[in-house]
Amino acid sequence: MAVAIRVIPCLDVDHGRVVKGVNFENLRDAGDPVELAAAYDAAGADEVTFLDVSASVEGRGTMLEVVRRTAETVFIPLTVGGGVRSVSDVDVLLRAGADKVGVNTAAIYDPSLIEDIAKRFGSQVIVLSLDVRRTVHGTFEVTTHGGRKSEGLEAIGWAKRVAELGAGEILLNSMDADGTKAGFDLELIARVREVVDIPIIASGGAGKAEDFPPAIHAGADAVLAASVFHFGEVTIAEVKKALLNAGLPVRV
Image (cartoon, rainbow, N blue to C red; front, top):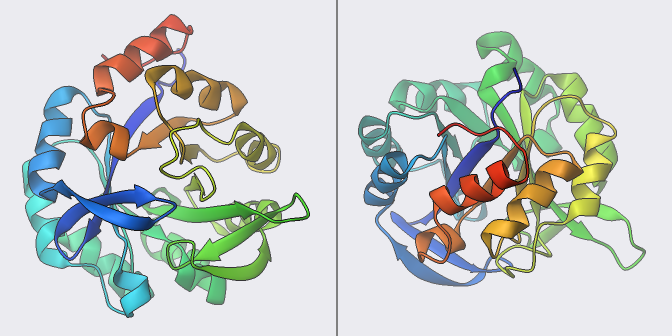
């Protein structure tokens, strides 16, 4: 039996409120994270991802109280990321109720962090967040700090390396497509799928229910979106119906 495609709403949280913008700029309020997480759980979401979008920029850890309240509210897997810099940070988040932990910036500066987390907690805990932009030369580069900073790191090779180091899955976010509602970056998904055999979560660019199946056909195992869900433009049910109509397995 085929593994069901996961549909995942993403809660980008800034100072305790869910926010969303275009290319991580001009952020606008989208609601309370705990209330939204509960609504998505009831609506049939397969997981919820919680990203503290200002933690790395401000050099602080993830807000644990919001994590705790969210974890107490939902009964589906919760992934938490933002400001994770050490094995102890992961331990704290897991104890606060997270099922998986997203790592991005710290792993770029110290790749051994991925190995250390995998050895301590298992690969299934690590979601490597990969924020990618196209360069003027047509290649893909890794960015951090909400896409504000280029790391001078080629993205496809980095994806391959993090899988080898022990990451359990990759949250692949196209910074060019983020918030544009123009569809997922299918080339980026396909390129990463060529070099890794761990699950890929496609992120960035969803605008309508019909945008989701092509991401799976390109190589993703799960689809993630934020603003189209938060502002009621697309529902979880509509996405799952589109996936079913495309002949893809989903949990209903």
